[in-house]
Amino acid sequence: MVAQVQVAVLCQEVLQVQDAVAVVAPVLLVPMQLILLEEMAAMEHQQQLHLQVTQQLMLVAEVAVLELVLVLLFLLVLEVVEAEVLELLQHQ
Image (cartoon, rainbow, N blue to C red; front, side, top):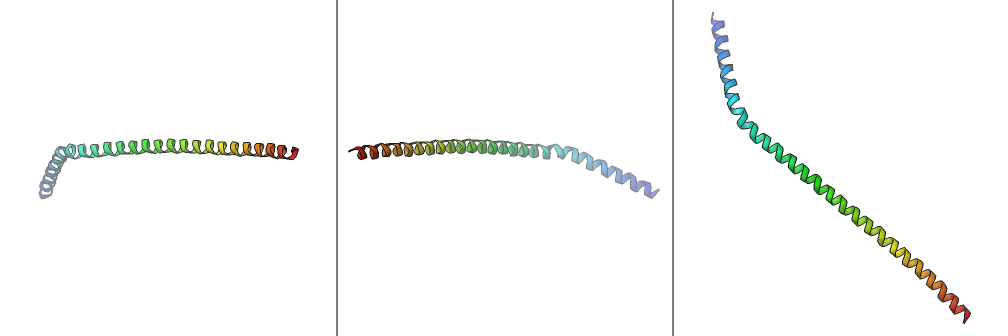
């Protein structure tokens, strides 16, 4: 009989805890959901920044390659001009 009373009291306490959790859980979950949404937005923003930096680096690399090609063309033109000048000097 005493055991049945103790079990009944424990069951009543469990029900009270369940009721308290049912009241408190939504209050705790909303801030957690907001934190998760903020974290997701921050991650998405970071990914966008990473993409922008990558695109800018690709543009810088493309410009560097084009500058290198221009320098090589300039050196080639100098060689041709030098050869022409040497040929003209030999004919004089």
